Image (cartoon, one colour):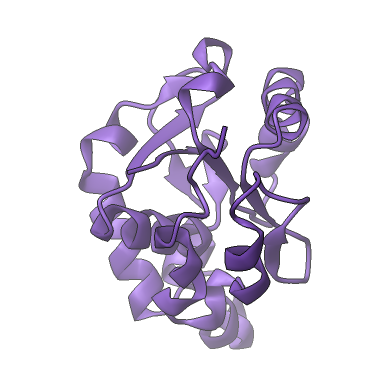
Length: 181
């Protein structure tokens, strides 16, 4: 099975975009490691977890039951409770990377981290699988995947994790995170 990296900031990441792919990959026996800027346990954006402060938009923007459930389960897993510091990561230890999004200010350290940017660049340089959430859009494969995975990717339609279904990440168990070299 694959070893997948999910880096997040110390706080303010989207709970659904992190929890749903973690649960889906874990249920399919993939290993998922988490990384944070300093190796400290991360916290999701509390507004996206509870809806507090979102006013009339709370039902539309906050994590639904599926997202909240996945996030709560993820918070209890050992890998999430013991993340790796960005500086200690070696992309060669992983078969793929998922880059979840978020909207709150805490995402800034994640987006502007030169250490994390270098790690993501290595995934590109080694042509390893990666998915990310584009602002106001859907997750997608950022570039082509390793040889042998092209047919899988053609069928893979990653939708935004907030689509309320774990089927959004259905392709993750079909070899997308397999190295073919």
